[in-house]
Length: 397
Image 1 (tube, rainbow, N blue to C red):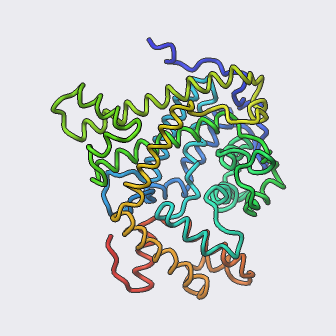
Image 2 (image 1 turned 90 degrees about the vertical axis):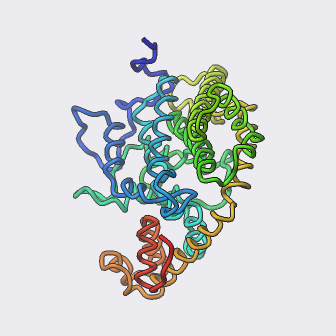
Image 3 (image 1 turned 60 degrees about the vertical axis):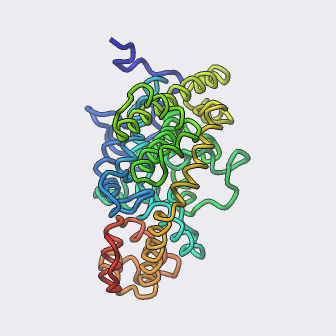
């Protein structure tokens, strides 16, 4: 039996559910579940989580049923995050929760929808999908009588907001002002915005990188956006495909793709574990806050793997994300999101009643945010249906 068949005791630097910094609104603890298990379950039961089923990343929903959606991507990230957490003796429930929640704030049509909302909201504090995730988790989800949002623990909200690193201070990657949603919440529930997140959030963040790089290779090959021959020259992917072809001569293309992607995910996971253990030995954090104050990310790729991943991303950007078929879908998505925003903002009477109530009597900034919240929560297919209903324009679906 594998020595990792059962969870090992938590490492000193792992989050401790029994020592959570708590929730903004006090609640009785559960006798059956830890605070992080409850957070994960609340995310799974959220309306915003169910909507991920019909939100896409690269392909628009009508392109086919076998390509990844935000939901299937989040499940793949959660699987990788749990693997990393178990191997590093972290809290698996917290890592899984962060993986499942990390994409809740994305609007319809992937990064295209986000780009359009950023443009539309530029005069009104902008749009940021991490800030939108926080709004969903703390305001927009309405499932409890005593408070808005899901009232998740400090550790979960900190990890969601800071999964890419510190947001303020000398270590922050971005220097522009923080979104108001993050500033407002942090004033009531200090999320230590100038430090790195806990190690479970770092594991979920690298799991996101591993998942989307590999499933984009999978989807891109299956969709014919690039060929086996082209992929053979790509860092990491070419080697994995050649090994699969040598190991399984004559196998169907879809089998070779699956075998190569599986091997590549395994290679990336092993690299992250080896590199992370090196960093932990160097820093030697004594507790979870030691990770936050380490001054650098402790979970990551080795320099060699990071360079190969950079090359892979460059190939995908050129051959997949900017493929003419994807560009056509992006063009359609831009028109849909921009048209809906302009209409709802200028003619609030066209909004559904429950959203119109948020609009009435508000200043321009609040009205714009209400429209943004409404559109950001749409699935791809709902946005297309709204566009067709309102403008009477037939679009491919």
